[in-house]
Length: 319
Image (cartoon, rainbow, N blue to C red; front, side):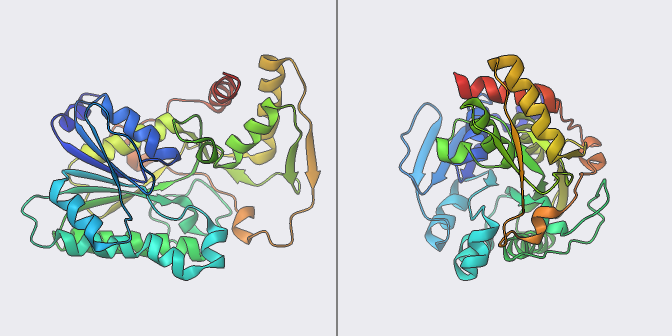
């Protein structure tokens, strides 16, 4: 997309750069002739056009440095587990909300108008039952994790209204697909974990009847959404859904995975139905399909079908 040429000669910061989505985003940014600063809790080596900083984004010092150098901030760091947030709400608050407070304070008095793109989640909508769900639907968080994500969104929107920076929050559906991240990050998400099992000849475990609907969006489409959100003008304070726009039951996704595994690997993969765990959060039984009309109107379009995406993921695991 020609609009992405606007990233040329910019300094772009990625928090959570060693994570599943963050590492894929960094790889894409390197191709855009921009200067990339990746922030991570892990020690990462520098390379051409990439500066790596080991830093804790829950500290004010980290954000003072980020704001001083950045033209665009892709903020992906923070807790990614709803169960971890439930077990330790204070830690989740420090991981998700506190960094936004530091960003806001660091941005006061900044002479440049920084673009901030925040990785939020579609689960902030709560127990949706019918789709597609548009951004006009009032969020109704039912987990600590989603409550903190939604509060971070609102903080960013308020700061945008106050003119501190231009922030847009992307509400991500179920992201899947290969990533340069470590194996532990790569297994994040139900389809990635299931594919890992399938390529090792293990059965897939499906809770209940599997007829709850998800919106699976391939990681390359998600990366393109982040890049476009990073350069599109007049998005300050907005939220945008990022999904495929297609609803698929988990059972259908597993059946597709099983069929693709048999075609590519020549072996069958069983699907075992089991009872839901007693401690399963109710949000796991939601039905969600994203309405992506608003993002489409800006020029973004998901390109990878579920069949092709699953096949590509299988190929990645067996390399």
